[in-house]
Image 1 (cartoon, each protein chain N blue to C red):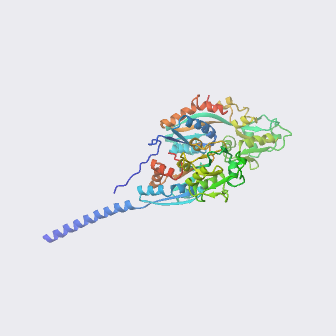
Image 2 (cartoon, helix red, strand yellow):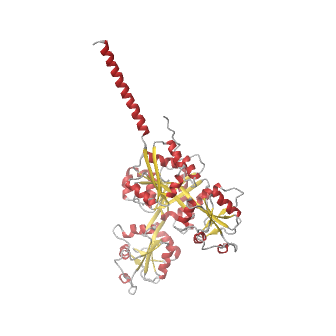
Image 3 (tube, one colour):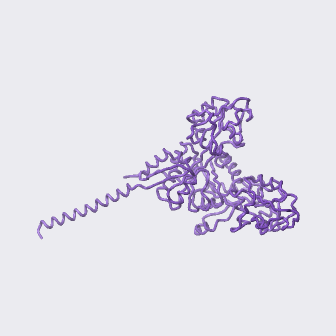
Length: 269
Length: 282
């Protein structure tokens, strides 16, 4: 009774001349990888990249489980995953490809120039309701704007500012696009909002200091600005040549980093 | 002890040995024949691609699999997987929630639809919003799309066809293609019709487009919101009419479930998926 076994090929080592790589993870890294990936496939037509989006956790998990070759991550590994993978963690590596941050923006007429993370937590959880508490006497009631909870910036904000136990108040107004946020803040005198620094910078929004530091490409890449985040790729140390080739492309000043600078993002220097 | 008793003893001994041997043999046979349950549930769009050739081929290799596949929705599939009532969940477009660390999500293929026009059409690009209005006949003249002052001839496919489902779910966000559209029965018929009618607009799966791409057929996919339909934009999710198809299993999955995934991702499985209209990912 002989059973015919099909040829099972789980990796890219296949008869077809096309090399296929799967990349998965954080939405924050998406715009960069879309741009670099497009150029990469243009330069190397025998490579096909597939991008699937979720969160940083998906990036870590998929690489650990082997369902994708490259993970896109914008936050640290969750503790639970770290515990599970403890013995094997040395078999994986990070490749830093860009820096980003969350910027806090207000109306151009707002005289408040600096807020601490504690202030922000009080404002966004709804505990501090009036601009008067922050030195703007005739500021009136604070209008809170936030990206939609499905948006990556919402999760990042929770992690960096709100913490485990505080929530963005339900009195806040949520928006689906960065453009809608920057425009609404521009039009509303008492408003405050947060979003990716790249988007705030591109829109020319009025940015406030957080804990005494303005976000800029210098303060973000040196992590002096406290709401900074690193955009990284996560992969196995002994991944295939194809994976290494793509990672090298991303960090090379002539290719990936030139694209990142061109997009107005903060390159790795 | 007489000779008779000795012979009797030998007879019983041989009988016992035979019985044990036979039992062993049949046990092995029964074990081999024991059916291995494999229940697959979730997104119908994935089911349509697995039915029927891929599943038939899998069962040829693994006749012991007792396979049951049921279409429905992605989230229902995930819930059933979590409760352990199914072995594999079919999902379209989304990964499982991030807190499900014990779920393994395998991307198995990508389903793409192109909006096609006659190659001679002066219209090269359409916005998502305009495309939505064309298929719901809120726009009926090419003039509104930057073309000639002439009526748009709208072509569609039967209701159960995958590309039509994609157009309705992804582009029309749950709406339906207008009932006045002329329904064509195959990719080939769609390609031929659009090729012969300069005022036509229709849709075709990417695979259908590749299969019908020959010099005599004058069809061209429109770029959507300025993004052309090609391997790069589809893979990176820049092109909007794309659905990623996943199979999800738990880390404690049965052997036969893992074999099914391995088969779907094998060269043969991927070729069969491509024949059913998806783009291969491995």
